[in-house]
Amino acid sequence: MTEYKRICLMMPTFKRISKLKTCIDSALDTCSNKESIVFSFCLNVNDTISREFVSSYSRITGMYEVIDEDTMQPNLSLYWNLMYDTTKYRDAIVTEIGDDMIFKTSGWDEKILKAINESDGLAIVHCDDDFIAHEKCCVNLFVTRKLVDASKKPFMCEFFHADMIDSVWTMVGLMTGLKKYLSDVVIYHDHVTRQKSAVDLTCSRLQPVQREANQHKAYAVAYATVVARNLIENGIGQWNTLQ
Image 1 (cartoon, rainbow, N blue to C red):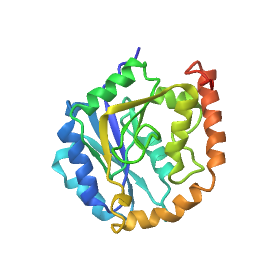
Image 2: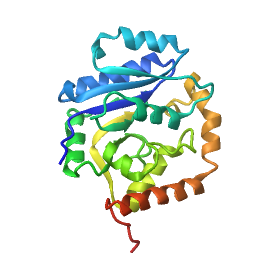
Image 3: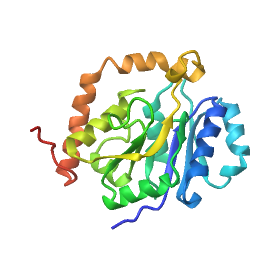
Image 4: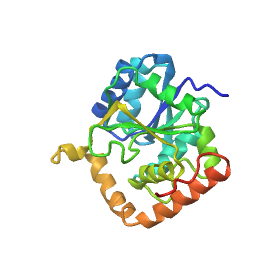
């Protein structure tokens, strides 16, 4: 049985230095073991401000990588799939983390690693966002390559460029009984809708992509069903029978 010892915090980010720094600092300040954390940042090739920040920020020296993207329009599933496919941290738990998230719980890394290891790497783990999702949606996500590879699908559904990718994972977890919600671990989602007047460049770029994604919820259900079937046929989880 594989023992998982590291978590790769995988974040696409675009010219949001203040939020990115807060996310990084919160993860480091509240973790129980800094050796259990590495960072993967997906950065646009023209985003010099973010590149200069991560290369000069001494707190993450030796514990991060940069994955390049060259898109004109945001495509979050592409970014997370790029990180999944090309990261050098092959032994680490893979994640969906936003640069607008703030780690609040001391020892969060230890709690997540415990949940993953107790399930032999076969759980879909998410934490409380202290916002609107809570147990209802995996807005943050922690899974293993063992699970993703058994799904026979990419890490994130390529059809959706925003929004619905976390809903797909949530549905897969519910269908198979693999979803594990850690209510005692808070990863505060400092989403722009908390401050409706604070729309930034990243938010405005994402809005048309989000509107498009939310018009295809039926596809998300169908896709999640296929992923759930693939996992169950691989001996992972079981169909959640309605009572």
